[in-house]
Image (cartoon, rainbow, N blue to C red; front, side, top):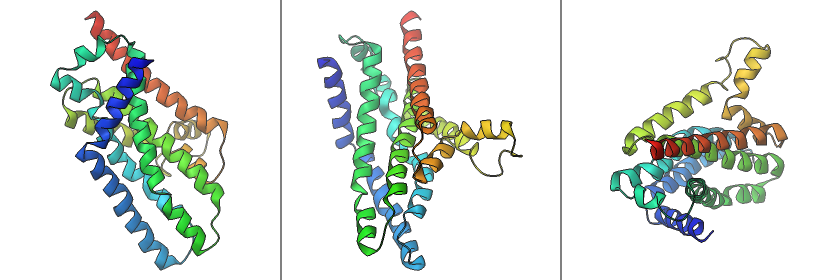
Length: 237
């Protein structure tokens, strides 16, 4: 457990001292907030629906930028061998890296809480959808992080890891867009259910169901397992 916590603190500290992390925060909080408030004053409604509708598209590019360094940086600097020979299992290293990135993402989301608090002071804000959407945002970001972490383990080039993560995440999002899957039958519903956007939309309505939670946890678990598989192959190669 000591080794796990040491890796977790190291990775989280790396985000705190990274210029990219502050760029992430500025783009997410300032630009997204500006676009949101501009629309609020035009419409005159105390709702965060527009803010959360923009969030998945910002995450599509911002979260892969956070995840691209998780393994690529270690491979480029040659520290991956030292990291994997520490008295901790591969699973612990993978989980420590993921939780550090996910913690930073949670911190950024916490910094956005003044938005709903301000809206609640300006009018009557329905907190049900807000709480569900924040939970969905954290899980959505965690899914992108796990995907990016896996893909980052495949290359030492951070730009390649970023672009491939964006492409794959965008492909998953497309499955949940209206009109992409033709028809309203079972097949179309199954395809839509594979998209993280579909489950985020459900949570953003304030309906927290086990199906949506299981989807995100399963997707995160799958991508982290793929990350472990890549490291295991490296041991036997």
